[in-house]
Amino acid sequence: MLDITTLSKRFGNGTLALDSVSLSVAPGEIVAIVGGSGCGKSTLLRLIAGLENPSIGAVRLNGQVITAPRPEVGLVFQEPRLMPWLTIRDNVAFGLAHLPKAEQRRRADEALARVGLAQFAGGWPRELSGGMAQRAALARALVTRPEVLLLDEPFSALDAFTRNDLQEHLLDLWRWYQPTLILVTHDIEEALFLADRVVVMQPRPGRVRTEVRPGLSRPRDRTTLEFQRLKQHLLTELDRSFQTPGPGEETVPAAAI
Amino acid sequence: MTGTPSASAAAVVPAGSSVPAAAGAGEAAGGAGRSSSVAAALAGRGGRRLLGFVVPVTLALVLEGIIAAGLYNGRLLPPPSAVLATLWQLAASGELFEHIAITLWRVAVGFLFGTLAGTALGALTGSFGLARALLDPMLQALRAIPSIAWVPLFILWFGIFEASKVTLIAVGVFFPVYLTTAAAILDVDRKLVEVGRIYRLSPLQLIRRVLLPATLPSYVVALRAGLGLGWMFVVAAEFMGASKGLGYLLTDGQMTGNPTIILASIVTFAVLGKLTDGLLATVTRPFLRWQDSLGNSRR
Image (cartoon, rainbow over all chains, first blue to last red; front, side, top):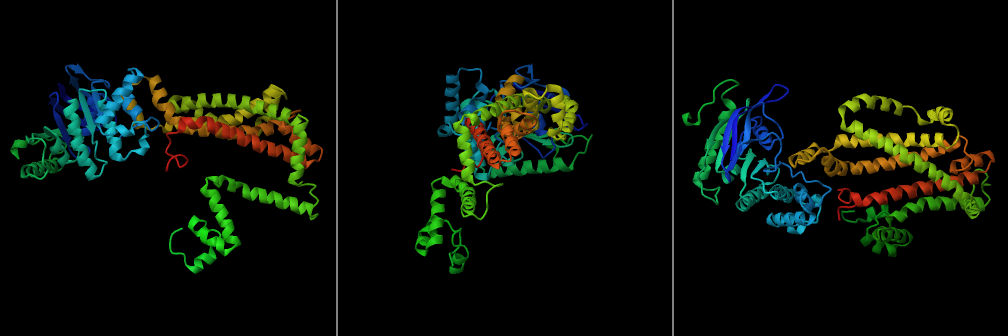
């Protein structure tokens, strides 16, 4: 169980990046966080990862306050961030250094097989395409079996075909490893395709504007009327988040719109 | 070489069009075509590096020919055969190897100390802002001094024997190693360091698993630049009163008015410099296999 309570983050330059954000995420849930730039969604993810500490409030995982990166929480970045000097296998095993070599290799190979890169295990990162490199990054994050996997716009740098492919692939991995997924994205379709719950954030200061539960069964079809209707609804919310309340004003409850 | 081979284009670039297909057609055309096919064959077999010998060997042969024909007496610019003969004599008497040994020793020791100091200080100023603020301006100012200007001081401090020579070489090696090491550490991708943080690496683990491998390519460049300067400075060092060494051989040739000895010494320097640089490159290559450079990718 991940609990985020009244989380605020003010940076050294005075910017209030996050203002009193509260959110509870159930084990195995998929939550997508959408919002325009400057809404603090990446900051929120970095706080959950323990890469930064909040000014007010706390992130708790199973009751324990997160103050630094923890083995239970994995993070996949927008870029694959593979170490160019390690083979794909050694990159995937990067977080397994505490295990014996043979065990590292076994687990890394298993994770690579799961992301469909088994035949590239001995290759170098530069030999992979963008989508393959991001799958290797997913394998690296999942091989340590984190309870919570954070994804910071993981597919935004990929072309549309590869992106759809990887979204399906992420769901496969989710079924297998069963982590809680918290995904930051600016792609509404991606959020609707993947998430049990879509959290819409608004900028300056970063706040939660509203939540949407798509309530669609999986596998989801992007072409259905219901999907399109939800997409339209989220787009409207995002649009309004930019026009309405300025600093200090109250958030308009979603129900009132 | 794309485009349609029109008659006029073929006339303008007869030998330059060294594509294998064109070479086959060129052979029938005569001399120009044949030489282009030789070049293409060399390049095709990966023997492109052999092409590097064509110009210097041709120049040497031309000089040899001019002197043999009596067009020039060769007193100040002796023929290559004379230089080779001198080298052979020096080698046969064993004298050459004594000079090489002492010069190599000086370069090695100077390179070792210069590299150690450059690496340590470069790592320090590259890693810590305070160290950078304290030390870097001073070191940059010292770097602006032409290193030969230290010679009188080093002779006063360390005498005219080995210590002053090795110190001068070490100073020469120090600066490129220092600068490149510091810059390499500052250049390490912050995003990869963040991956290290996510996996909770200790500072030591971070150095071993991220910083060292990330800086290694630049560091190898630093070592090679340092070694190059080491060879430069050993000549200056051996000008300051040496009784052995290749630099001494240079001054000896000057004193006795014998350009053949000078050239023999220069050739030896060239060979040794190239050999040690190649050795360094070969030794470090296995660690840099992953690099995405033109040299080893693009299969």
